Amino acid sequence: MNNKLQELQGRIMAQLEEAQTLDRLNEVRVQVLGKKGELTAMLKGMKDLSPEERPTFGQMVNEVRARIEEQLETAKKRLEEKELTARLSREVIDVTLPAKKERIGHLHPNRIAQEEVERIFIGMGYEVVEGPEIEYDRYNFELLNIPANHPAKDEQDTFYINKDIVLRTQTSPVQARIMEKGKLPIRIISPGRVFRSDEVDATHSPSFHQIEGLVIDENITFSDLKGTLAQFARDLFGEETKTKFRPHHFPFTEPSAEMDVSCFKCGGKGCRFCKGSGWIEILGCGMVHPHVLEMCGIDQERYTGFAFGLGLERIALLKYEIDDMRLLYENDDRFLRQF
Figure 1 (cartoon, rainbow, N blue to C red):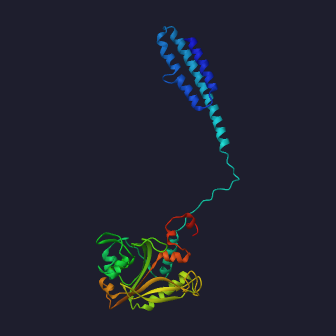
Figure 2 (spheres, rainbow, N blue to C red; figure 1 turned 90 degrees about the vertical axis):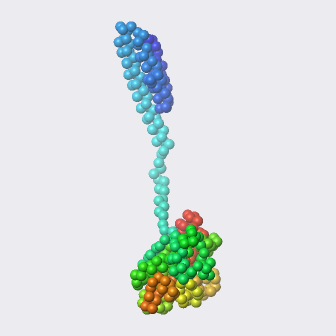
Figure 3 (cartoon, rainbow, N blue to C red; figure 1 turned 120 degrees about the horizontal axis):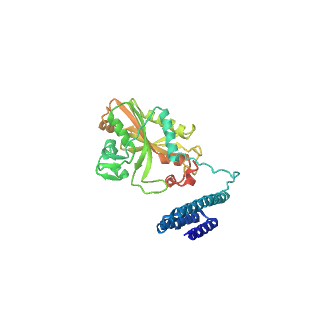
């Protein structure tokens, strides 16, 4: 047994000296000191020795174990230092290299345009009000003077959840909800996403954004509408901007008009941007139809009002000279970084 113990010590010491990795070192440790290791097996074999031999052999085994554990610790420190040196040589940091630039996100061009419009109208005393995108047919059509089978409904026919619930086609339902509450006077704008069954192209999308405005008070006239929108156009496109109103038809306003602004690129002389006309169509507007006031419980003899609506994407396209509306939704970072 003594010879085997000496032979084991010499062999294990040699293996520890030759070990080049921590994994190999651990293999040697398990080989000799593990539950099924060679030194453990020798300790279990002490039962075959005489009572007189056991104390002496036990002492020798403990001494060999201590030497092996000491050598294991020495080899471990040597290999750890070797690995650290190798890793430091691989992970050299060149402090003269320029640092990676932190990129900070910013608002989407749609949101930039929306906040600019909101600031203008808030400065005029308007309140920003939002409403649900999933709306009742009653608010989306009926209270806006568009009953069932009305021709105007075909132009806006959209995505129905059932016969009474629809994805809103405009943000006008927000105006109907506010009027129905009867808290007068009213001076609001209502931005939000709307849905229509349009084909996707450079100027159309089945989902887009609108900003609509509503004023209800005593003695409101078409002159108030024209003055408000003319000031809005100057604030948005520049002090030299002129406005032009053309008669039009909307079911929920009477009289109704479409408003053009003078081209802010050529000053009204005619260019590619305004297709040579000198004018750019910007929004629809009109005096709130008396029947709409009546359906919402407002005294049409005492109160009048005006409403207007504009496409947010159209504002963004004009402001930033974007040719294709689809660019606003493709999330192409090369495009969005320009704003």
